[in-house]
Amino acid sequence: MIPPDFIDELLARTDIVEIIESRVQLKKTGANYSGLCPFHTEKSPSFSVSPDKQFYYCFGCQASGSAIKFIMEYDRLDFLATVEHLAGRAGMDIPKSNDGEAPEKQQKRKSIYQILEQSADYFKDQLRVHDERQAAVGYLKGRGLTGEIARDFGLGFAPSGWDNLHRHIAKTNQEHQLLIDAGMVIKKEEEGKKERTYDRFRERIMFPIRDLRGRVIAFGGRIIGDGKPKYLNSPETQVFHKGRELYGLYEARQRERKLTRLLVVEGYMDVVALAQHGVNYSIATLGTATTPEHLDRIFRQVTTVIFCFDGDTAGINAAWKALLTALPLMKDGRSARFLFLPHGEDPDSLIRKEGKVEFELRLDQAPHLSNYFFDHLKEESDTSSLDGKAQLSKIALPLIMKIPNGVFRELMISQLAEITNLTAEKLISLNQIEPAHSSSRGASRSSSSSAPRSSAVEQSMPDSTEFPDFADTDGYPPDEEGYSYDEYDDHSLIDHTDAVLGKTHALAEKALALLVKQPELISLEADSDYGFLEVTQGCGLLLEVIRLLIAEDIRSPNLLLHRFQDRTEFALLKGLAEQEQLLSVDNSPAEFKGILSRLQSIHNVDSVQSRARDLHRKSPQDMTEEEKQQLRESIKSPRK
Image 1: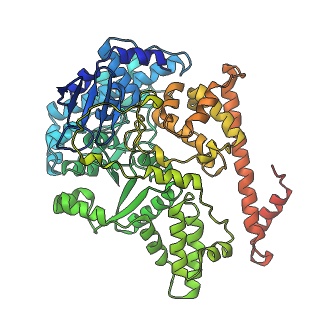
Image 2: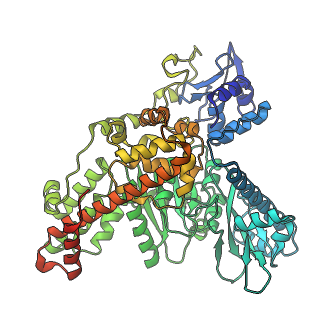
Image 3: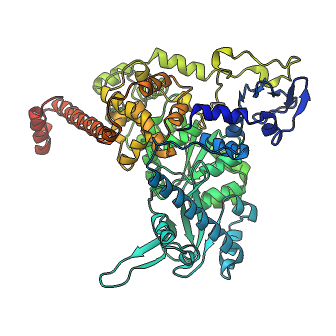
């Protein structure tokens, strides 16, 4: 936890004019300074900095805030990294807290980050000086990559040999163990023989994988030549979980001041090659199919994701799987598209052949989720016949109902109704699915968040450079879309209205009360599967908090609350944080585990009962023996 008093003192010691003037050309205009806004394109200066108020404000795009927020927005750093930067500049030590991770565990994580950074430096050096480097350099040049793009992505080279990296870094037993813990060295033990260790990556071009703070957390290696496997990733470690991380996301945030969409491709080389041609917004999963955690992270950055797949059977199957994963996350305002490449092409080869303009034209013309959804299902059902339409509705409607309640789901139902020549109400009733009820609260919120920006963007600097009166907002203007104090830009699209209206599950609220006081509790269950919370009523906010704590490695209560300060859920979380904690800190881990276990049990019972309801709708003649047994067991099971 970083005490608020420390932040206040840090800002008091920081000159905002000096901070901004080192990045933006400013001119003194009366009591303030003005210049061209770094956050939107303009010809006349509308960006003003007040040395008295230690505050900046743009009269065009309404970007505003303190020195901390400016660094976060301009340098694309998160809150902690920004505070560390400014504190180092001011000669201040950030106070340590006793309510985070155990000091030993914190130091271990820090040491793993350091050993991975040393490894990255070693690989980069080998690409420049090693005798075998020509094979790697030749391969990269053959793929059209320049030295500048290799530098920006930190590319390196792991030469042949069993223990080059180990001999270079492991000067002590501690460093030897850290290399093992970081996944860089493999330990092999054979009965009756001495332990052997060898480098995981050999004869490979190395791609460092970075988290959102730019820290190296893992590596991917591409074989030089025809060896197997073609690509090799780091194993899961204390700092790396491949089901959550995305290669190239950090670099995309650095290269594009304001991301509007992300392109998901298959491999590291595709990401780097696309960036070489000016497509700076591509990312790749790390040897896994797209997960809900991947999409959750993507939609926190942008509102549009484009999936890129081969046009063969494997690519089509992968695309459909990605669509099914995306459905529960397709809230109003979000968009997913699906690009299928010509036979024999990958993004790298295609952009080299066509160029950026033609490639981006393909992206702009890629089918939307709704189009791909119905086109795919129509291929499996003959919609020119009545029984084909019935089959289509039977498959499509349950999938559509996985989409969060809102306009998009209603439009998907309407589209299905048009195809089957039935009304939406008739479709739902015939398939025995609960109708969707729109939330007026959610609707009003959605409409307000999508309201157009002020036309002042097109105007010049006003004659008066008086700062707007923000007395009611603690000196901060009302947040505009894209200028949240949070490092993420899409919180306005996350809706946990149930939590605000007091509909959070009682057990979920107890778990939240523990997490907002002791975020480190999540490290006890970091590898657990929390997917069941997604379909457990009243657990949406708990699931989001858990995913945020794991993905961003948050261990500070203040930072956790800071992530929600512009959200309607903030009042609930703040209230839980301020509640008196009657349970001792030592008993909190067991209590947290117990709550999750009880929520899992509730989910299991609900699943059984839901299955029983489905079986009740079937006639006994249509049931298999297994289904009959399931129905008997559900009748015996006590309801909770």
